[in-house]
Length: 551
Image (tube, rainbow, N blue to C red; front, top):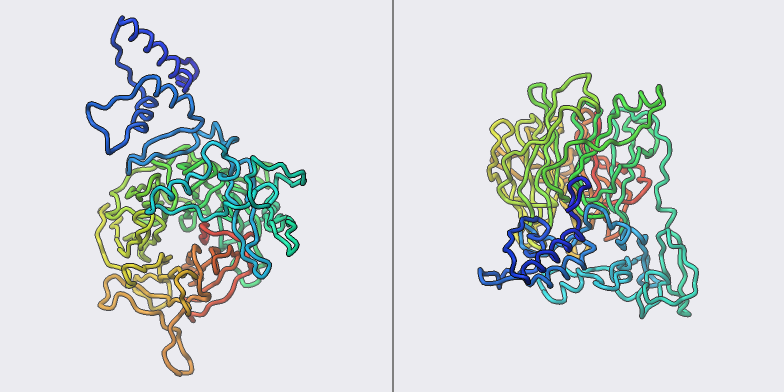
């Protein structure tokens, strides 16, 4: 049907259908056709509640269905729900998220609160905002929480951008904040000040705190930056941008290698299965000496499936570094249980070239409870990996904790987070490297302004094999004035990332949302004194980011 790379296009399938239709009408033959594309299309056209042996799809209906698909319509193998995603990025140019920058409408003159204007509602004339439409039909689904009242082009109410006849000249390439004055006039303020301007990176000292990708005001980011952790260090400095924009992705860095892995996540066109690496130990030195560009490289080997909202962690045992990718969200409403690993020998000569040649992903035993937006952390001794909480589906949060035996390749249900079942928060957990810890973990809970919390959440210490598994972290009190429990530095803090530095005995909590607003703030926790110290603010506010320390 097609000689180019053995690929079969939708038009090729339509030609085939025409041919089959002609032959069947002439009663000349009976043909059996094997085609993934046709199979997916038929599966998408059939409804689960009516599917039986007697049901069939009319050939003309199938041709019409295929002809109208600028986007790939597939059926989730997990839920059976229809999924709309861009087909191999061939039509990314037609996606409203690609063509139009995020824009916002200020809620009122008395507040800084704003709401993003939905681009699908404004520019997709045929389908509109599918999330909103589906929620109207099914009350169990979460609708779109963006603005559907204002025009994305001019900021006025009562019409959509593709209907806009305003003669106002609006910059189409930048994010804007629309504000409505008391006289009803709409003004637009550029948000370019929030754009992170990349600069030429210098050497990345060890240890340094890295923040990678994330989301900011409707944009999925590819910008990265680092903060040197020496006492005399300055502020944040740009790293090379990721090759792909990523949010709700995962990242890790095996200790002592200078290599950073970033994997999966939600991109501009859907979930990603690609893995990028940056060799900080050798690439930058080589780039200075031989003129090569210092940048992220996409690995030849990929994750077994595209996913986002998952976790990653590194362990080193018996001279082998192993990076694990755990759980996540593929498509549909349910989470996945998949776990896989990437292993390579620990050596001083480890380089990007070595990893591209030899490192391959292998499947591991799946987690017991599929989940996403969970936290993943390795024990201090590297023998076990723990997963904490997360979402099972669109609405239900699990409090379960599971542990994975690295050598035995098996999972076991361990404990439950000590929160009420119906209001269990998402958490970030890191191994506890404080002086007196015994293979423990520190648990930093998310908090939300919608929960009407009046105080800052308490940081917990979790020790799996202790009689008291969950205890509030106690702040050492030199004055003996009483017991003081460690609290989060800010209340109503959500979607942040947490990481730890074993050598410095410090933990870091950065980014996310504070009072439902994007933030670039971050804090250091001294694990000896258990006191918080605010970090310099990041160059760009971001949530659903990944943070890690290279050592």
